[in-house]
Length: 127
Ligand code: FES
Image (cartoon, rainbow, N blue to C red; front, side, top):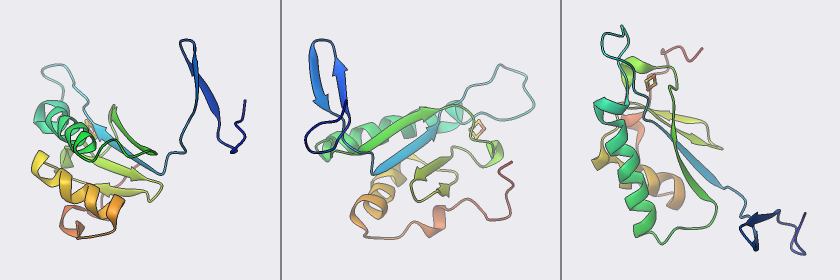
């Protein structure tokens, strides 16, 4: 169902509401592997704390419509984690800490600042 304003209508319990278009989607790897696995995991290396920092920053910003934060499974470049990828830009970030999160959101949501030093190296294979 589509609303009069052209937005998709979704139902939550008995309430129907317009689903805001997602303008920015931050995926944060929080993957956890069993002990002894040969690859590192972002979750215990700080991914869970990074995800929590994103949710705090989103709350501090008053939950702007269209911004979504998702805790994800493995995004592939495990040795560079905790990793974050932002869509629709398709920008990948590596070795993110909770302290980096306000700057990342400012770059993508406000268009201010820089986060080039946090980019995943271009030589890393994502397949
Ligand atoms: S475990 Fe995070 S990218 Fe693989």
